[in-house]
Length: 256
Image (cartoon, rainbow, N blue to C red; front, side, top):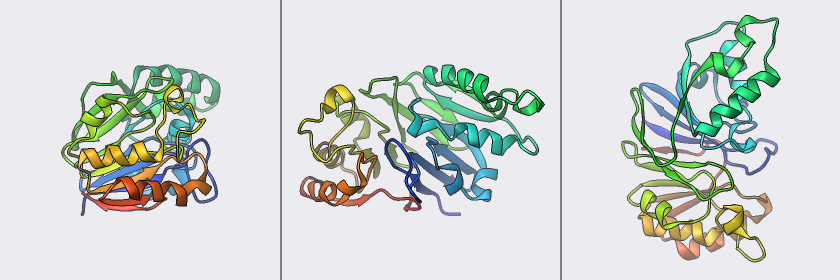
């Protein structure tokens, strides 16, 4: 089996028809790892991809990156529970899980009293620390400049990085250097009147320059706030990045 990274979804805020929010799937001969699980992601995963899940990573607790985690837990537990899976994320994700389970647990079904807590074993990762997924190697993280605790994720073994959400920093640049595939947010086409620094996002030029300086071979531009900005965003990206740049869309897949 070829090792691949597939874009499951990359919408910012909320899903649109056939366009889930954030989610990326790493597939190897050992199984699959899902990085982020925003709304709409679950219905874009095949039965085989779900059954072969070995771990889930959540970069932060904003809804467009984690809202389908409850739906995924239901899928893993009902009608019959499978093996508990490791779930990695910043400590604040653990707090969210407890609140989420308290709100959506089903008292009449033992395995669904605490759906996420039953389906997953939460393993907190301090942004900036490394973690290991059994069979998939070591993953690095970077503290992102975002309103809440957020981490970018990188696999040196598979040579890809995902910025998640956050503005450009020198630490992010160093983190991304040397990756072949970069999945990076460009929430806004430009910074005019956007307050992107305080809001914790990047514009198209910053996204492209991040990839150019990193030496990435392929840049996937994701997390646009307005899908109508796609053409303008990619024009700016092309002016600042000399490698292959593609606008993120579901089912894009890259060998690694």
